[in-house]
Image (cartoon, rainbow, N blue to C red; front, side):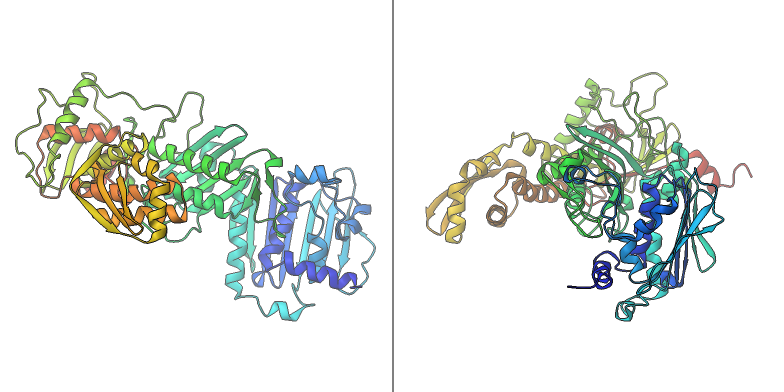
Length: 607
């Protein structure tokens, strides 16, 4: 039989990967103890010393030996408790595992006790009896010489700065899960982080800015969606904040920080229409659900979770975030960029009555149905798109067919994106808004408008099929031919009429009218490939989306095509009503705004 020391060291190999793992376990214990303040001190990247001090409930003298005993936990007592666990720690193996590979000192005092107690544990040595010590209510855990008893593990540690970087990122992750708790972090006698409790929206904005950068609270959308037992809250950054890595994606499930591939995939699906390939969104998101619907005991370090109905969770998250992005609209109340150098416009978040507002959120979006355009706007838009029906024809120089294309909601009312002034170099529309100057990339804006219209037809099942003048024969594999035979109804819903001519040959008789001009053979092969691997309509629509995005780009107004004032205003009004209107299909911003403060700074006015 293995010795208890060796058993603990084996367990430590699963739980204690690096110094950051120790910090994680100790900080989570502090949070479980109801701490309102947590101070973390680190020396030599955590290999020399890790000290975590809190003002929680503390540990009674007689319970100190139990804190180091394996599986001596008070957080669960039955299998039913395990299925509904709500605390961070619950298995009772963290402190014993740490004590098997490092020197541990526990000092603690409960509110009822008049003095604290000190308890020492070292690998291979019998623990001492608790001795009295001066200590405020709460607990201090010091971990010295990590892995000194297993030198082979110590050799796998990275540089001091690398290990400390992991510690800092974990503290930041915890700070975003508990805005009500104060955190400090010191490394080699230097204070690195100092975060006070953040209870008000402005204080939370400050914490978000400190961890994700000052641009995040300025260019973020607030999320608050619910369906059945699921609720999703938090913030998602505008596409302009996207990164190559997913390092600024913070996920929490029932308050527990997690790294979950399913949730990350759902986030990327939500951004599929507004981010180019290879870019990652920035987000801080909190998923709440019935504890019985999620297994938090799926990973030794509790970093991963397993959902009972993974597909339902994925669909809820992706569709909720997709709708939040889609319903972002200019609010008309404020639309400015600080200094005129941000990558996208920033607008106050419009939310339903009774909902809290995100801190100066970016493209604001009502979580309800958008307002219906006025008849004059509809007429303008119809005339505007009529001009683009044949993309090979030159753009008409005459104004669009509308007697009065300007915004006329009220005598003194100015629409959110302003009234057009000129089409600069045939590229940028300059518009006068209530708070400054709006600059719109006409091609990017029209590309988004056209794409959303085409996509709506596909998703609503109202795809118009266009017969080919000469049916196209396509050679395929036998498995692909079989796939066509099994999926003819689904393909017909997408506007594709395909018949079999033989065991390895197809004939395409019609395609979606929206995709006229595409390489039909390539489109068919791509769709069949998706069917072979996924066999879902969702994946087929993803392929169609890519084709639609390309088609929208080709149909959009090109640089150098001059627009009349009426046409420019029609485009602005349509953009204000378009889902995901803040970015084109490639993730570029469609417009920016210079407020009067920014303009005054350019000319040193007021100095």
